[in-house]
Image 1 (cartoon, rainbow, N blue to C red):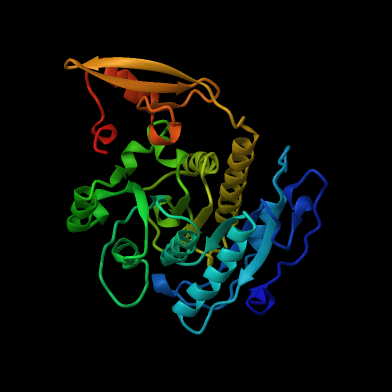
Image 2 (spheres, rainbow, N blue to C red):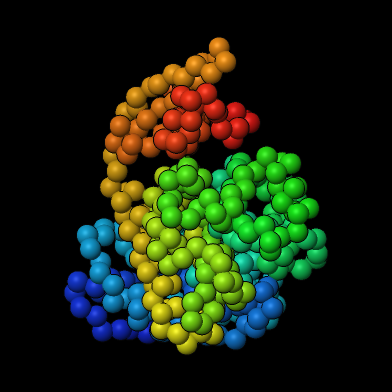
Length: 356
């Protein structure tokens, strides 16, 4: 497929040598980070006309490139199809081209239902996907059309989809139908409330550590001055918190796709554009830090006795991150926090660690 027919190449910007824009290219490279912007908001009740992402690019390109080593590609703006399904199809073709080159696609804009395309494409290339979503809404509505209310039920119900773990972070009780929340809990997927994510990333970091796919619904971020998302909320993660979480996403050891959806592309507020640009920057910083980590790790092993039963915890001596389990293969141990270990020493074991 010739992507030139479906992607509008980004314009050139004059930048300084120390700025990240000076190192951005326009063609997919092996082992690169590939940015792609989407204008199709039909899944969130919007339209599909091509929007101008210039203001966001200007804010992003002028940020520092620090000592980043991973190539960064700005592929451009995806032209919407005649139907939402057409856009999903073209997006999946682009995503597949990225995966074949071991590039990490980062999709910006578009409605939250494009998670389906990210998951579907990744599922074609690997099985047993670990998926983490930051979103204030949990919706499992049924329907023929793919939109932001039905994509989760289609993912969970597809026979050919292979999902290992699903973590839903940032949900707000007053915005959700309890039947959907109850169903997610019944299948033993993790649901974390907004209140548990505020002020620190420590408690929820384990949900990102082994994630293959992470998506962010901008509706989970609080709006200020002018709506930041398509469905703006007065409560949500603040500006500093979402940037900290974007860095955590980048630090994932298995990360293969990222999506940032439901951003209010119709906004003319420069601060909104700045925040989205800085979210991208912190994501890229996290990815670069993770790639600089040594491949071989060493672990300290600790045993805790609870009700006459012994439980094992491991600590990565390089990163100081914690795991539950004593399997020699760290991939078979469950990422956890230092607090989980401290609580276990007091006699309380997090139920999440023993449900498998």
